[in-house]
Length: 286
Image: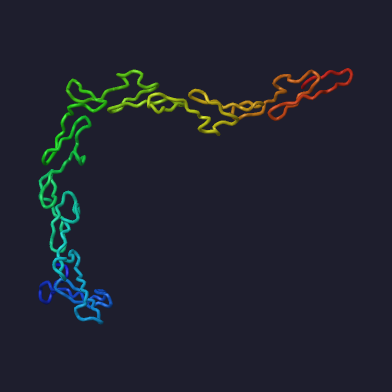
């Protein structure tokens, strides 16, 4: 394998310089291309002035950059130093001339390569440990250990085995919730029955106004009740078995009119009309 700017010449059996000036787009149209070992330069001269008024642009191959200390020279780019984490965690970055390689890390387990040397991995800080919730992770060189906490976390207490165990707040503190108390690991939560929702304090429950939340929940009008709601019909209507509101026939429900009046049912109401019977007759409904 040859370095950038060179290619393998089968005739001579070795790497020889690539003449980059043979590329049609090596330089701009008004520049002169000058090929050099492993690189090339683009030269722009002002024809109206002396030969000293020329601008030289040194073009470096991939993996190299212009050396500001030595004009017209290219120097290798140390990708490992410039680009951190360029290789996976389990790989080691090794700079080579014109490039870099990701090699198997030479660090022991629990260490990683940084800036050419092995550094301890803090498994606790990086959450790479397997400690239980009641345990505390302590980083040690090359590994970590899980210690029982000196003080238990809130919602835990030490048992007879000196281990931190969950406190059942629902059982220990009666009445902590207005309705149902549900124990959780390290805490608890309150729940409400249907028709209620948890208030801002997280413990008591408040009624849900279903009528306000869903104005179309009823046909007719909705009346909120504690923990529920009722659908009522407008005056002159009654609720049928289907749940819909239907007109009430007041004339069949009784005798709303005077003895000398006839009852006529109307939509949502009724009318009474006075009727004079001829001599020898009396009014009879139905």
